[in-house]
Length: 252
Image (spheres, rainbow, N blue to C red):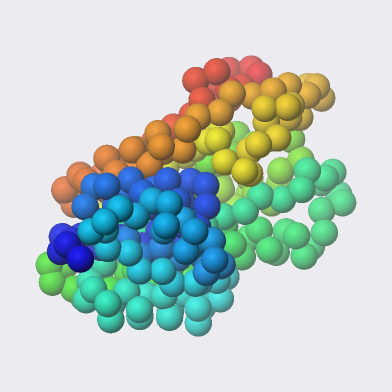
């Protein structure tokens, strides 16, 4: 296979935004380590997006499990010897139920995936990036417009995305000493299976149901490729990529 100059890890790479980001990075010349819970989904995504000459490594990973995350980054180091980019994309939502009826188990599952998973992957990436030569790298977290404004009945998801924004800022600050840059992409209504219901109608703050526009995940991938392509002395701390007419800006 063709030699690749930079190595990227993308979590949640088997479907949706993660698959689109993986494709964008492959097209930009990265070797891409595709991580996700299901090998079959990773293999299907690879068949769809990887052209001849592309370098991929599929590593089934549960980002909520410290041992699984450690094994992912050990595989990266063994295969490539370094890591230039981590895209913390793996995440999940939760059913829209009244706040007082949210099961603890559902809360914990969302926190473990969206927040703890991002932390665990970031920690392992730090360990590689700070010690490699040349030193440093970049970490991009998948936030959400929910990191700034909630939807109704979304406390677990919204709380974790607010927390991811704090983790992004702490990572950016603590990474300075090691030439590790960290930024966040906040996505509004990418057209994936997770947002399919939006075309039929989604609950609004005033209690009504209204359809919402969505955008091609390729636009998200293009933004990530831009962020990743900056030199390490420049950083996009936060970027919002959203459907222009979605009810986020203003009083929706």
